[in-house]
Image (cartoon, rainbow, N blue to C red; front, side, top):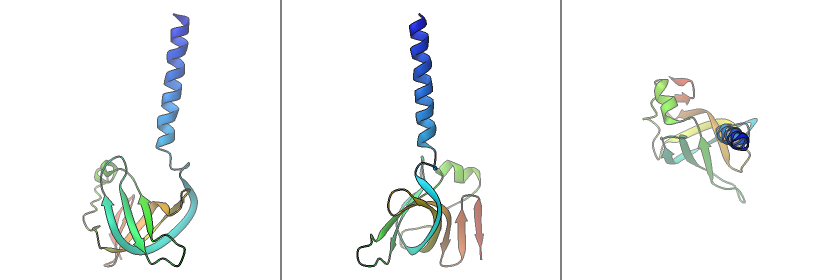
Length: 126
């Protein structure tokens, strides 16, 4: 019985830390802020993470696509943030925390051509 309790305790510790690690941006993104400008190629506005693929003007030897990750759709909805204006073909400027993987970032701000800004804390217009 004691062995079973120890085993169950260890399993709960391991599974809890694995779940926490999955949702941590600290392991996947640095503190360095980067900014890109380009065109939205793909939008994924669903759980567990909202993401956008942005095509940039790439120089020789550079990858033309960036993956921009953000909070979950439900997180945006709870804050009253609607991403309706973010559509395929939209010209955008995006800034965020640079990813550990090449050409990835965690969204800090996404700005449309008309001045509309989306951040994890709200929307606004210039």
